[in-house]
Image (cartoon, rainbow over all chains, first blue to last red; front, side, top):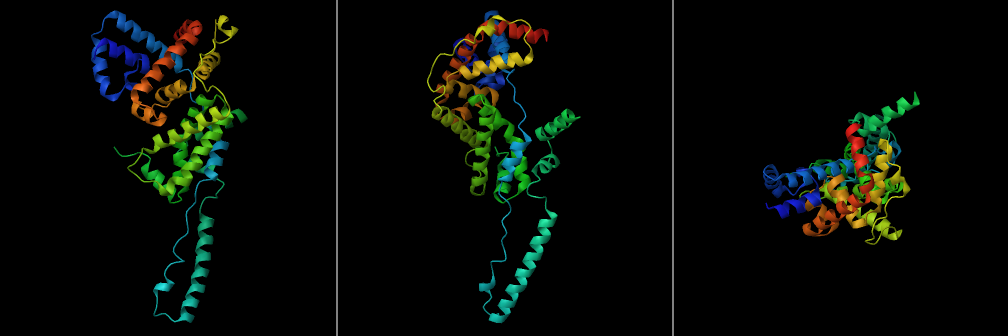
Amino acid sequence: MNEARFMELLGAYGADLARWPEDERAHGEVFLEGAPHRIKDVWESERGFDHLLALEKDVPSSIALETAILGAAPGRRRVGWSLGLSGWPSVPRWAAGGALAASLALGFAVGYAGEMQSAPEHDYAKMLTVSGGGASAVFLTAMNDVGN
Amino acid sequence: MRDPDEELVLRVGAGDKRAAAELVRRHLPRMVGLARRMLGDAAEAEDVAQEVFLRVWRHAAAWKPGQAKFETWMHRVAMNQCLDRLRRGGRNAGEVSPETPDARASATRALDDRQRRERVRDALQALPERQRAALVLCYYQDRSNIEAAEILGVSVEALESLLSRARRTLKTTLAAERADLLSGLETG
């Protein structure tokens, strides 16, 4: 690493060496340690500028947006009942018909029970909070605080 | 290195709503942040984020692990959406010099945090779109230089040039306020 390259990287990526290209970080660190004061002054100035940029922070996303996005997420596909009957050549037609009727009835029952047990499709805010919360939980807490 | 989102995306593709919720929790704030900084409009940023996730939901079942890193792909989709919107709207499409922020610059004492943030935000918005995109990806989205270059479809050298110009332009734009901004940070 020479001075020209150090200054080039400093001017592009800023003072935080963690943002520098991976293969040049260690060289940059060594160069900075042994650099003259004028270089260290430039580095300090860039560090100040990094702080300034950091003022533009992320804001939490809205719960309404999360809910809308999750509302469009794909659900589980139901598979299984449509397979198989044609693979049973020894079964008489009447038995196959009976099995089909029975399986349909069972399918409805299982499907209904499954729906009853699973979280309602629209209850995504709850799901987000249960699954770890993060920004959503913080947002909900903040909203509750505002409400109080 | 294994893609940290790989398993979640596969589960989303299989219709797992909890995996979808986790993916949203993990990436939505960043997608909104990227779009907000690129477009300067909170409502439009939410539209972009929603569009990105709709694409995720559509493509999750066909996702092939081991190709592009999922998060890089999301960033590319979001960035393209933003650049399309900027071009469609005819906003900030050329490499124009940013305007110096208005007379507010002279009244720079006792700036509060909100005002400081707004000044930085205004200066970011005044950057030409490619410079802003490079800075947003490398600085605010923590993308590596290789990832950012890939997302923007440029070489790493070109990315470095965009970043240097972005920082130089911002320094000029914020020169009047810089001392005040930083002294406020030190004392605050």
